[in-house]
Length: 252
Length: 385
Image 1 (cartoon, each protein chain N blue to C red):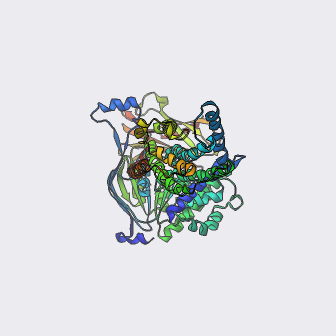
Image 2 (image 1 turned 180 degrees about the vertical axis):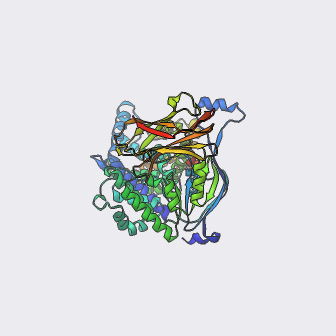
Image 3 (image 1 turned 60 degrees about the vertical axis):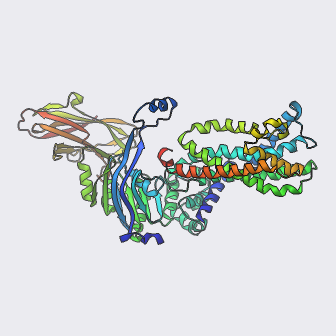
C-alpha cells in the first residue's frame, strides 16, 4: 500500500534528519526525558513534597510523564507539520493527513524508546510490574486517538491562523497542570473531581498509574468517558482536517 | 495506467468551465478582521482562472503561455489535484508527475540514496518500485559517486539532475513542466528535452508552462494563451504565439541581461514633433559576463504593424564584453520619417547568435508623433555608454 510506504518514508526522514550533525545522535531520545525527570524529581521531592504513598516519586512521575510527553510533543510538532511541509503541499498531490500522522508516529517511536528506559527504572527501584499492565495497550490506544484527533484539528487550523503555533506551547503546559502528571489525582478535592475529570487526559494518566503501580483496573466510569470523548475528537478532527485540506494549497 | 482508457477518445485531462479564485491580500490581523465585519463585501477576490474549458489527449504536448500571474501555474496546480476549483469540474486520469521545482521534497541532511526513496514515494511510487528503479535513477542523474553524501553538499546541478531523474522515473501518464528549462546548464537542458521527447513518443501527455516561446513552438502540438485567468487563444502553437506577441504587453527571455528602463528623449515627454530626430534610451543591467549581445528595438503602430526596427547586427556593431552586475545604457538616435500617430517601442536584448533572448519587453513604452512629416534619409545610429 503506497499510503503506508509514504508514512514509512516520512517517519524515516524525520528520525534520520533529526540526529544528523549531532554528536550524541539517537541518545537524545533517552537523555531528554531523563534530564526532565531529574529536574522534576528534584523540584518535587525536595521543594514541593508530593505524597505518592509507598511509590518512590521518580517512578510515580515517570509513569505519568512518559505518556504525557508523547501527547505534548506530538501536539507541538504536528501543529507545524503542514506549514513545515508547505513546499510539498503546494507542488504535489498528497493525502495531507500523512503529515500530522507521520509526526505523531515519530513521537510514538520516541515514546517507545523511553518506555524501555522507564521499565528499566522500575526494575532498578525494585518495583514489581503488576500483571494488570496488559491494560496498557488499551489505554495507549485511547490516548493515541485523542492525540491524533487534536493534532488534526490544530495542524489544519495552523495553516490558516499561524497564531495557533504560538499558543500551542502554553496550552500544552496548562493542560499538563490540569492532568495528574506531576501529582496524584487524589490531591484534587472530591467535590471538584467531576469537573476535573471532564479532561479526558485525567483518567488516561490515572489509568496508567493505577494499572502499573497499584494493580487497580482503570476507574471505569471516567475512563469510558475518556474513550468516548477521545474517539469523538478523533472522528471530528479527521473530518475537519479533510474538509479544510481542500484549501491548504490556497493559503499555505 | 488502467484508468487511462476510461475517458472517451483517450482524453486524460478535461477542464469544464473551471474557475478558481483567491483572496486578494491576506486579511488576518485582528484589526483588519474587525474592520471587515462591518463591511458588506468583506473579502476581495480575484480570479486566477475563469470559465476555462479544454481537453488534453494521451500523447499530446500542450504549451501554456501568458504573462506572469496570468493563471498558468494555477492550471498545473488544478491538474495536480492539490488545488480544487471553485466552480466547474477538473477530471484527470492517470498518474501525474510534476516537474515543478525539482527536488522540492528533498531533505538537505539526508543522503542522495535516502532522498531517492523519500521523493519516490512522495511522487507516488511504492518502496518496492523505487528499489527496482534505484540504479536507473542514479545513473541517469550521474551521481553514482555521491549517492551516500547528504544532498546539502550537492552542487545545484547535481541537485536538479537527481530531482529530474526521480520525477521522470515514476512512469507518469501526465507530465507537468513549469519553467523547467529555464534552469540548469545546456547539457542538462538537452537531456531534459531528450527525455521529454521520449515521453511524448510513449504517449505521455505533457503540459508545459514556459516563457520560452521557441520551445513551445518546436515541442508542443498545441498551445494555450492565458491572460488574467482567461483562455484567450488555443490551437496551433505558431498561431497562438502570434496572438500572444500581438498583445499589448508581455515580456520574455532569461533576463541574464535585464532591460530596466526605457526612455524616449531622456524622458522629456513622449510627444515628438514629426521629422525631428529623437532618442530611444534603454538602461540595462547585466547579471552575467556576456560577449557581444545584440541590442534592438521594434517600433509598431496602433495596429501592431511594424513601422521600423533597428539592431546592432544590422548596424554592424560588435557590442563587446560586459561584466556581471554592470549597468549600461544603449542609445538609439532615430532620424526616420514617421507619419503622425501613436506608436509603441519594444526593446530587446538577445544572445550574440540570436539563438535565445535575454529580455524582450514587448510594447514597453508608447509615444506619439505629431505634426507633418518630411522626407528623411532614415538613419538610425546606436551608441552604447
